[in-house]
Length: 528
Image (tube, rainbow, N blue to C red; front, side):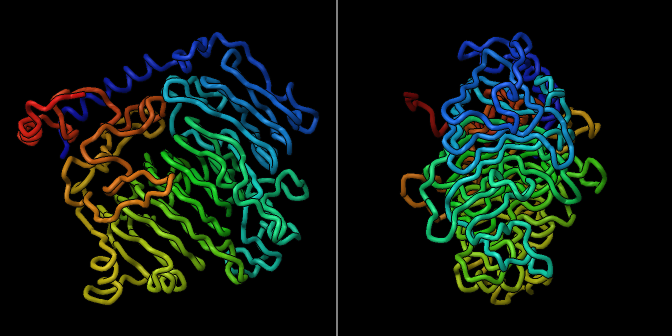
């Protein structure tokens, strides 16, 4: 339900966030304001080919770092980025787009915190919430390459043919990462068959924000916000934000790495994309598309999750088999052409307890993907599809009501279809499109006790998954985990990030009888 309070607080939130956050990144850990930090180019720390030294290189918040070339962490190199550090990257379109690349055998230790995040952004970003979210493709992105398994083989055909896959290097199990030039071994990921290191450790990324990347290299060829190629499961990926990227927010090319607490917003392609035999785990993902769906230069978004078992089907190597819990992905295109889940090419894996809103199609599968789904080697269970025109489609056709496919989707697999606005507030507007003035904010947190957020499926107790027994990225009625340093907080794009109504206990933007009922039931409880 909308309320006047929602719209009134939007403007207040933008002003408060911008005034309090501008240039103060890292203040909690003693960092100077960003504008007073002396500028240091990363190229001065690297050799003529962009390689940082073998051994340790440390970046800290005493400096404002700039990057005007590709920078590589070499095999045997360790890049330490201390909390509160800001790296601004210059625009250099085409194949020479600037990016930070952690090569096989290199490690990055970017261990930020909620109060002292690490931020990568464009040189044009003043870091005060005013740099429009429609500014995308202003630098490359962060690319991490490891030595875990992938299913790249020399016979692979791109999208089934007739052209050869662009990932081929001539060595089975070794791929060329998307967006980078061939012929340079620093751009390779994986290992020859039999030499894979599935517990490979590429370091730590924690509380890192990647903004305004995805530089256009050529037609339909951009760099993802965070690219992970054959990254191993000893690597830690937690609390990562990708905002305003021209390609995917997060893409997993094979590998076994796990990831938790991810935010992807205002990107122009998929929010999670996996292929080439990715077998990791993901939990707690929040994605928001917007603000434009016109098809023009400001257009944003494609699929919520795009899953492929293989880059180009046909070889016998193991396929992608990830496990994903607790995603909430809001798509503004209604009734446009985008999917909540676009699943193709020999998939395996499972997606549980998630919410997809405003998609033209909820679960969209090719014929071979549907075969895996029917065989229960690929699963979509206990997910809620809100305001979705066609919740299920197979090979371009929506199964009729009462068909075995619909019974499996709704009854056997416990998926639900609900009306627009029935579970979360997924309407979103920025006016004008080239500004960051949010005039209609989303609220991705379901109200406490919402039936469409309930589930009987609980994540496994395995040392990675948290025991969140609800649908979506956020516990119904609770404070969301989205970081205070995010662009969403800066511009006030969702109501859950806005401080305000003390009495709004169920966080629906209203103080009413529903809140009173919650208060009465908790009266006389202790709070310690």
